[in-house]
Structure formats: C-alpha cells, structure tokens
Length: 170
Image (cartoon, rainbow, N blue to C red):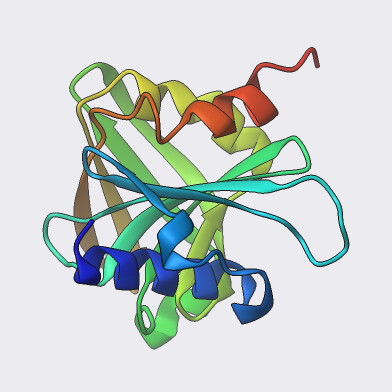
C-alpha cells in the first residue's frame, strides 16, 4: 500500500470515528480498489470493520462501509467537506450495470459525511457486492454531483463486514 493510500484510509478512519479508535496504518489492508481495517472501540464492545474505496472523479470523496454492532452503514465521505448545502436531508441515486437505479434518503452526519441508514444499507448491499462499479449521484441545491466507485475485487476487504453484519439471522 502506498503512503498516499495509507494516509487516505487514515483520513477516512478519523472522519468516521475520531483519532482515539483509529487503526494504525500498518493494520490496514488493500484489496483491489478497497482499503480496509478492523478497529476496536474504546468501550471494549465488538470491533468495527471498515472498508473504503475512492471516487474516480474526486480523490477527496470515498464510499465508506462500516460494520458496527451488527449494523452496516454506507456513507459518502469527503476529506474536507461537501458543499454547505449538505446539512439538509439528501437524496442519493445509486446506479450500476447489474441493477435498476435506486434512490435513497441520506442525512448529513457531519459536513464531510452523508450516510444512508443501516436498514437501507443492508437492503442495497448487493449493489456493492454484485457490481463492478457504482455511481452515486448526490443532489446539491438543484445541481447533481456524481461519483463513480470501483468495487471489484472486494472478497478480502468486505469479508469482515459480511461475516459480522450481514450473515446474521434477523
């Protein structure tokens, strides 16, 4: 993994959960376009699995998947911030070659994070696992910005997420 790759995932990890729980760069793995890690929470609860892949259009935008306490969430992360309009509820349109376009609601968690709730993420997870690419369009005060994420290969990067969050009887 390149220095810039380690730095990028470290940045995503800081954005997602703060410095105290961040995995060291040496604990991060790479699987195709994905960078991934597992980290333990300060409270001793179950570990989190995280995987992120960068946008082809903007290296500052990442698709981040986090498995925490048997819930998986998908987020768009920006290394600094999305536009100031990102605080409003958002609509994301997800497109891949294997599925019809899907429109989902998302919310701004931070100025640099727009997240899809866990129930919706679980429902749309096949878009990630069964597609080569995923294009996410985000509305921005009437203008749309689209980001394309390369998803394959992902077998190693998403194993922890699938095992801890998706292969559970619910």
